[in-house]
Length: 309
Image (cartoon, rainbow, N blue to C red; front, side, top):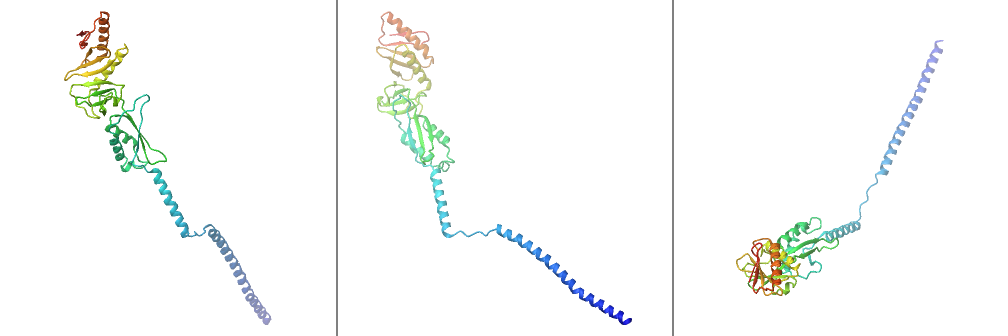
């Protein structure tokens, strides 16, 4: 009996020993499977990421040269388009039906324009300040009625359009020089004869000894307005003035009447040219009705009164 039990125990022990390796192999195989699965999963993700992150290819030496040359060409083209020349083109514009007027200081104007466009901020189309340049030129050259600057899109040379101020009168100075005067009484042009300044303007013979300089005030603007009003008032009645004269050191203005032997004496201090012109027109009409022709003058310097000689 004991030998049977012992035999049975030995068989059970051997059976357990036999089962143990198989179980270990099962566990090992299970472990190895899961490890391969995890590695495969990880490797798949890495492969996908490696596909997305492709290595950057090195640019060849020839391509670098081509890119550099193209960049230089673009920069040169941009500079050529944006650059402004300091040699502007000056174009004179005249109003319709107006004579061509001389501009005495045109070369000086061109030189000043060049210096203004030579400033560092005025040498390109992005930072150029054309309004500032126009204002500076207008201040320096009052003989110009208007100044306008144009910057061409495809050209580097700016254009300056200038319009000379139209003269109102031609002044003959005491040294026998002729000057065009604008509406403000400034001398805007000079010539050796009145015809060189135009034949459509009344002449003022100055005997007062006033100093005359180009681009500066010669006569008060009130004098110019006075004479223009007298011309307009008399012209409306068919009376024309051939010459104005400023006597020395007085407020008197003498006006020669076309076709008459006498002149008119006006008072510049009394700034009422319409009344004085009206007094003259009425006096002339009255004298003609009486067949009286003054030989020297008709004096209307006193308000509401006229004297003749």
